[in-house]
Image: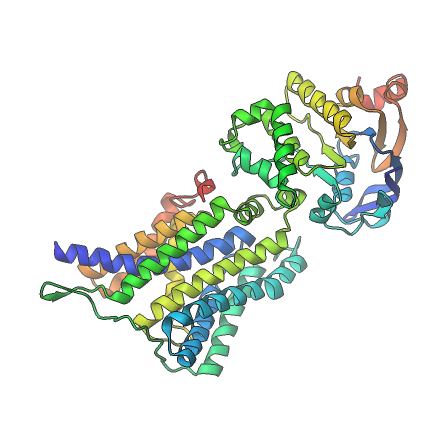
Amino acid sequence: MTLIIEKLHVQHGAITAIDDLSFTINQGELVTIIGSNGAGKTTLLRALSGLLPVTAGRAEWKGKSILGERPEDLVRRGIVHVSEGKAVIPELSVAENLELGGIWRKDKLDVAAATAEVLELFPRLGERMKQGADTLSGGERQMLAIGRAMIARPELLLLDEPSLGLAPLIIDQIFAAVDALRHRLGLTVVLVEQNAMSALSIADRGIIINLGQLVTSGTPSDLLNDPALRSAYLGY
Amino acid sequence: MQIFFNTILVGLSSGAIYALISLALVLVWRSTRVVNFAAAGQAILSTYIGYEAMTRMHNYWLSLPVAILAGALISALVEAIIMRPLAKRTKGTPVESIAPVIATLGVLGGIRSLAGLIWGNTFLQYTSPLSSKGYMVGHTTIPFSPQNAAIVVGAAVVLLLFAALFKFTRLGLALRAASFQPEISRLSGVRVDRVRTIGWAFAGAAGAVAGALVTPTTYLSPNSLDLLLVSGFVAAVIGGLESLIGAVVGGIVLGVGFAFILQYIGTSVTFSAAFIILLIVLLIRPQGIFGKGSSREA
């Protein structure tokens, strides 16, 4: 087991955003966290990447606590978070956004190799290297955000709603890319999604949370075959 | 025609100084979103330190790097010791955006008083080996001296160095990224706190260059750079507060504009002209000439 979350609490002022949440994720697993708006999905990822302080509980990655660490240090421990809403820097060029992903890394040869891999996976980024990231379409921005994360050579990838605001065809491309990446590189992925169907289609396991608490977890087919869960959380 | 060219030369020299002060303000604005009124105080302190170095080493040119290093260090310390803890403590409170600005006023006052205590409120001479007397063209002296030339060259060197740093180095990329999107930068592994301190240090260095270059043309006292802060601020706003190129163009525009007003209208209106120009720019183009859109350039 590589990611262990135990009795996690995150407080947002008076509101308990994450409430006594426990789960574990194995190495190389792709787990999707599903829940409605306000369920605490984004808060959970922000707590895991060090953006939000945790009030109580335990969170360990590869046997060492990740709580109280800063995001920039967690990146160096292999935990890379692609935050919600096409996390690119619009004022920078595509090439600079990618360069940013490896800015802290000493192994420049491998940064170059990782960049080449990203451009192979997302050829459209390669055609637009000199352009400002603000000129990209929504799908291209999401590719850039994921590409930037990959240049850090993550072991644990935290993805927050990569499908947000994208057309169905583009969503399929993004999910296919995530699926390919994690199989090729043996990534552990925590994928937060509202688009449960797409997410479950590439996930090993789904975890449903509501009001910051665990509802249930199981394989995609378990979750999809439970009529109560389907109507309450999967939205059809 | 001669008068016209003279006026432009005078404007270039003062504009170069405004550009440096404006750059100091823009660098701080970009790194921490604070209008740093302490910039004038930091610059005066570094200029005093340069003055001390000059009186010991008897060499103006050797005193310049001392002043510049002191300026960078002072600015970094102000950020790390005062501004950063203040930002953390006021985060999420109603005074979050105003407290840092007021703190910079406090720092300005504090540094001025400190300088007054150490060096007295008298006028000191921080002299350069270059003459402050205008060049002779034919039989007339033009109001542009070798020291003015040093100011223009010095400012140009600083600006080119910064432009190259921001455009071509990893530190420059980190500085830009951290100013546009601190959160994404942190998630990309940029140590944003450290980068911000470096941004302040560069700002302090720019202010120190301005102080050490301009002071030989006037005199040194605890508030001798205060008026420059106003002009630098107006220049920064003209330039859009975000853009380094804008800061420079704003400084030059203001310097040349002032020179023409001084030449053709009179001394009495120059200072009010700064504020009138500021208001006109804010009313017509609040984002400044270079605001939004071209801020990516540098």
